[in-house]
Structures are given as C-alpha cells and as structure tokens.
Image (cartoon, rainbow over all chains, first blue to last red; front, side, top):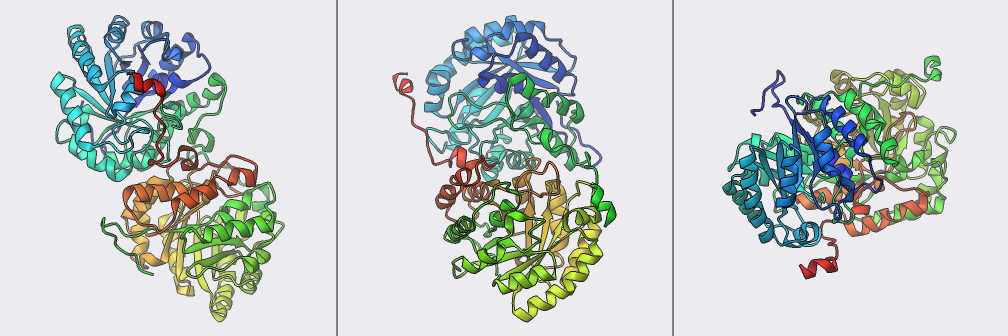
Length: 317
Length: 317
C-alpha cells in the first residue's frame, strides 16, 4: 500500500476503525452479536480499508467480546477491507484464523507492569507466545501486525525509555511481523515525543507498515495525529464516537474519535476516502445502542458546513 | 512583552485565562459575586499574567456577568497581572474604566450575521462605536485589545474570507488598538487555516500583540494551538475547566481548557510560568461551584506523573 498525493499536496491518511474491538471491549452493556455485525457491516460501506472487528481474548477477561468467532464468521466481507483481530496468545490466534480474520494484531506493552496487568504475563512470555503465533499465521497466509502498547508512557511506571520501544519494534520485525502499531494506550503522549519516536521508527520500516494508536485521555489526540503525520506516519487507529479505553488503565478515556479525525482531514484537505455523513449517521446511533453518551464531538456540533438558521431578530437589525 | 527562550529551545507561551468572562457568561446558575472574586483571586496566584475578569455588556443580554463593576472593584490586584474587561460599546467601556479595568477588549465578528446575532448591531455600527471607545481608553491610560470573532468561520455564514479578517485587523490597528485577538468563536478552525492566517497577521504586527482564541467544539483546539504556535503566535486564551462557549452559537462547546493546555506545554517543554497543580485544584472545584461536570480532561485523568497503584494481582505474575 503506498500513500497517494492529492491535488492539495497532502498524502492520504489511512484510518483503521477500531470501535468494534477497542471501543466495545469496555462497554458494560452487552451488545448483541447481531448488532456488532450490523455495525461492522455498516462501517464496511463507509470507505475504510481496515476494520479491527474483534478480539480473541479470554471471555473471562473481556466478556464484551466473547462472540468473536460468530462476528468474524457472519460479517459481510467487503472487497478491499482488511478485517483485523486482536489476539493475545496462540489459542486466540488459532480461534481468529479459524474464523477467517485477515490480519492478526498481537499486543504487548513496553511497560512490564502494564503487560502483567493487561496480558497477565511478562513481556518475555508475550514474546515467546508471539513466535508461535507468527508461524501459525504465516502458514495460514494471514497478515500480521504487532502493537507496542504504552509506547509513550505507562500509568503504573510513568516514562517509557524510547530505546526500549525501538528494541521491541526491532524484535517484532525480526520475528517476521510486517505491521507495527505504536499505541498511546492511556493518552500520555505529547506531539514533540510523537514526532521524535515516529521519525526513529520510520528509519526502520516504511510508512505503509506503521500505525499510530492514540487515546484522547488528556485532550491531545489530534495534536499527536498531526505531529505523527508531519513526521511521516500515514495510518491511524480511531474509534467511531471516540469509544473505548483500556480496562486496566484507570482514568483512561476513549480512542481518538473517527468522525472527528475524518472531519479534521476533510477540513485540512487530507484525503481519507471515508464518507463523513455516513459515518456521522452511524455515530449518532451509538447512544441508543450503548445506553450512554459518547465522547465524539462532531456528532454533537455538526460539520462546519452544517449551518445554523439565522435567528429572526437578526433580520430586523 | 517579548517571548523568552528556555533551555529546551521553545519560546514561552502566554496563557490568558478567560473563564471568569467567556467561561461564566453562559452558565445558567448564578455564581455569587464573592465566588467570582475568590476564583479570580485564586487564578491570580497561579502565574497568569493576564486574566479576562469580566465583561460590561447589557445585564439583560448576559445576566450572568451583571456584577462586572463589583468584581473589578473588589478583586485583589496582583502585580504583574493585567485584568481585562470585555466591552461591546462606549457605555460598557466607561463602566469598565470606572471599575479600573487594565485593558479593554473590544469584540466584533468578521461575519455580519454573527455580529448582528451577538452584538445586535452591524459591523459598521460596531466599528463606529470602537472609535469612541479608543479615544476614551487612551485618555484613561488603559490598554486596548480588539477581537475578530468568527475569524475562522461563522455558524450562520460558513466560510469567512481571509481578506476580510485581515482588513478588520488593519482597521483595528489604524484605530490605535495595540492588541489583536483572532477568535475561533464556534470551533470551526483547522490547523492549516490557522497557520496561514497567523502567518499573514504576523506580517502586520508583533507576536506579543496577537492572541489566538480557540474553542474545542470539534476537538481541534490543541491541534490549532500548536499550528498557531509553530506559525509564530505566542499568546492564547484558555478557560479553566474548558468552560464557556458563545450564547448565540448553538452547538458550540467550551473554550480550550487551561489546565489541559498547560499540561501540553509542560509535557512538550514549552514554558508558561503557570503552576499546574494549583490550577488543577481550582479546576476540580468547578463542578461544586457550577453544579455540573466540566469539559476539561486533565482534572479527570490526572497528569502523566500521577501514577496509578499497581494492582495486587500483578505482583503475583
């Protein structure tokens, strides 16, 4: 995949929609399998080329996503869309491959403490499991991506050594993993740090292989997107409605919001290929589906071009 | 005032706190005069050099700020802090000067429709009134700032011609107004547009005379701050807790949040001179004062350095 240049001179920005996975995983209300499938099918018509459609973790750990098999088996596969499954271990990978996931996304935290809290194993155990997963995925012809969680900071340990993150990226690549995600799991990144780390990682792999995953916990999600984009990153995770967060990261709020990101790109002239009005209609259905308000702002404010009626009294002045 | 360079190479960013004015003006619950004064006095100890402390508009139009005189007369004036009053007309300017406002902030929208909706007069009438205000302020030795509202877009008219904004800036300066604020009144700006307009305005006046006023309506507040900063802007309005909005701009959410902005600067190494822990403590008092949650995110998430306790089960792994 290579980034294209549009007439305004900006490279395309690729949005991977992660609401069905990172969005729904912490929802306290059970979302019916049919509703998940309907959501993914609707997202598939919005212009996305990548959707993280579910995860194959222990149903005890993440009960909200215990229907991963059914979801992957029953969604309508749209040509040109890669349906990604998050997997924590070999068993999860086997389940995902059986359910015809196009790509497996492996996750390990740069922080030992966060990996133990989130994956319930040490980083060393995670990496050992990944070796097995990579072999299975390659045999099955599935794509592979690996995420460095807490790459910009850990809620338990604080600062994360950048050399450690780079070392994990190198390890992933040496294992044969093509795609790499740098995840700001609990929204601790700042634009200066993002620009520096992205530049270092892009010395090691092409932009088409790198995804940035930002949370908007401290309001810096889009500032970080632009810093990463300016540093050469072209692919970003985002969740419809700004859903999501990490169940083991207290205080963390949602992923950056997909429709807010697409609006930013539309306003700046950065092509995404995504149909914003369709996306907004979907997002506006989330409160009814989930039973609560969601963080996304564009669905409330409307696009710039959604003008407000002029008040009657103004016409008298 | 000239921007200073710190050891990390970033110029200082000056934050003008506007919660007492742009924050409180749309609050439906009456905030007692004594509480307003206590808030401003507390803000005065946080390191701000500028606080927009109130407005002198018609008490019918903005009843929440009808006690402007009492507030300005009774706050403790801290050395080094400029206390600004927003004024819409000559009567307001006279009231503000009597109450010893250090600086008057005049406001007119670039959009005729928005000016009629907000100020209940045409742009031409606004400008005519400003001529009188400038004379009075100069005679009284007060500083002057003038704001171009809806400089980046109007909720009624949509796009605003950049030449029109530049023309208004020139008119303000020709009138003898030193400070200029470009206001994104309803959060329609994008970073590309911000960089372009800031660069054009800074061809006309020094950075020390320019303030950017962003709302976070569509989530782009901090992306716009950084675009403006990179283009040379050094002074920004922000409101404690992300309070505020425009009463005549339906759907508009709050100002960019002061403590979230200071956190961004602290994390990036941009000096502000503001005491973030003090600010956070103040912000965390807002829900009790106002009777509702506020949009600021840092007060909920905590700073990066506010680490979370490691769960017990992690120690067993």
